[in-house]
Figure 1 (tube, rainbow, N blue to C red):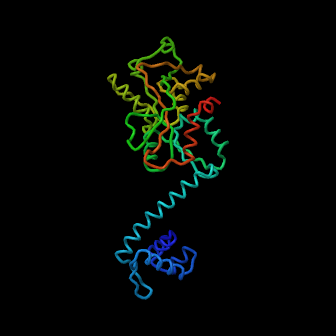
Figure 2: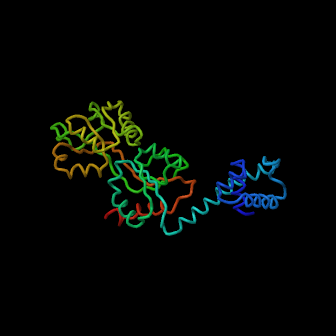
Length: 300
């Protein structure tokens, strides 16, 4: 059975006209007629009822039309997978990465662009929950995000690194005197949290609830540096992963206006690769995943 015959038959059924089908396929009408006859010979029965220029599907034609669409889709998937083997000379990578994670993987992104300059790279900056939904919907190929115990079963993950979450507070005498904090100690402070779609926000609120209170959420943002800027205004508390706190400490202005304190019981920020476990993983995504696991690249 000729794959072209199936393509021509599908086009004929969808266009409901030999003229329109031939135009869409850039072939002559006799070519389509011949392909349909060949297909009928392969099947062993007519696929069309013909009446002048009009036609409609026989029962066999309906079955072939439905099956042909699946066959063509599988054939195109096969071609796509074979193309991926062409040493990543082309292709695309759709990557999910929350804003706070981006700075940690700048080196990996640069290395990826250097190794595979012809791969079209697009990055979407979603929170954890929306990132998971984007993977399920097929909107992105792979993500780096905070891992959770409630990850949907269709998704697979691979841990990459783990960091503690620290409390970020105004540089005031009351806080300077304390080496570390408890969740009760910040109970009455305004909280500056990540947007609701970020899994880390849920973890922080859950920790407060474990200690018998609901935090007062003064503001939310997807941008970690904006949360820190709100704390610098002189009141409130934000919660940032250790690598981002190190960036604050490296800034002279931030180090003078902000305090970074461990808080107990601690929250761990575990980052990992996440992908759809029931779908084909492209070579472009595999190459990204390999780079993320490379200690040499991460430490550049």
